[in-house]
Image (cartoon, rainbow, N blue to C red; front, top):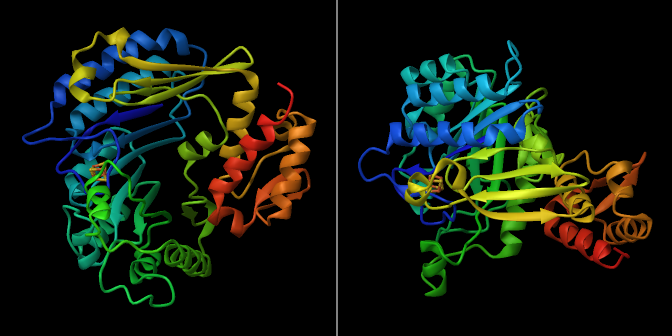
Length: 384
Ligand code: SF4
C-alpha cells in the first residue's frame, strides 16, 4: 500500500514530483476523508491480497497531522489487513524539522516503525544550493531523534552532485557521506541530482546559470560513495540503496520484485495482475482535482499490459538490485530474448549470470539505464 501526501512547505528547485506548496496548513481532514473514501471505493478489487507494507510518501507526509495519519493507517489495516496481523513495515517519509520527539512518539503510536528522512546533505552550503527548508545540523538532529524514539529502522536520503561553483573535483566521497555513515542511520538512499526540464533548476540550467556537475564527475562521486559506504559496513543492495544487515527496505524491495501494490492519494500509482498480464493505474495528479473528484473516479490513466510487458518490467526492476533476476523471470522473456539479453549484458560488463541469476555488476549499477534499454531491445526483437 502506497499513500501519497502531496503538500510541501516549499517547492525545492529540483523537484518534479506531484506536489503542491501548502501556503497555510494543508487540508488535513479533507485529505484524510478523501483517502478513506478512495480506500472504500477501491478495496473490493483488492480483496484476498496480503497487506505486507504501508508506505506514506510525498510530498511531505510528515506535514500531515498525526491523528489523520493514524486514522488512515488504522482504516487500511482494518480494510485490507489480515485480522490481528501487523504489516511487516510501515514507513513515513519525513522532513528533518518534523522529526520532533512529540511527532515521533505520535507516529509510533500510529504504527509507523520506519522513517525515511529527507536529509539530502549535511553541508549547509549544499542545503542552501538545493533550496531546502532545513539547515546545517537539522539532519543529524532528526536522525538522532528517530533513533532515540526506538523505531525498527531509520533511513536518510542523500543527494549527490548539489550544484556548487566551488566544486574543485576533490577526490573521494563528499563529507556528508562519511558523516551519514557515522550518524547511526542503518539505511541510506543516495540519489544523483538530475536536472528535470520543468523545474526551476531546469530553467536555470538552460540559461547557463546553474553550475551543474558534468556526468563524469557525478559518476566519480557515485563510485567514491559506494567505496566509502561499503567500507563502513553498508550493503549496496540496490542502485540507490545502502543498508546495514537486516535493514533493507521491505516496501521498496517489493516494488523491485514486481509485486502488486495499491496507491491511494493524488498522483499515486497502482499495479495489479489481471490474468497473465497487468494493469497500471495512476490517480489524478493535481491535489485540488483529486479532492474534487468522486471517490471512484480519481484514476486518471489506465495502462493494460500483456504478459510480455509484465515480464519485461519484472526483469528490469529486478536488475536494479544486487539480487538480480531469477530463472523464472528471465524465461518469461522467451528463450531467444533471454539469451540475447544475457549475452549483451555480459559483453558490456553490465551483468553476470551466476547460479541461474542474472546480477548487475558495479558497472551495471552505474549504467543501469543501459540495462533497462537492453531488456527492452532484447524483448522487442523476439516474436510476440
Ligand atoms: S520536499 Fe521533497 S517532495 Fe517536497 S518539493 Fe522538496 S523534493 Fe519535492
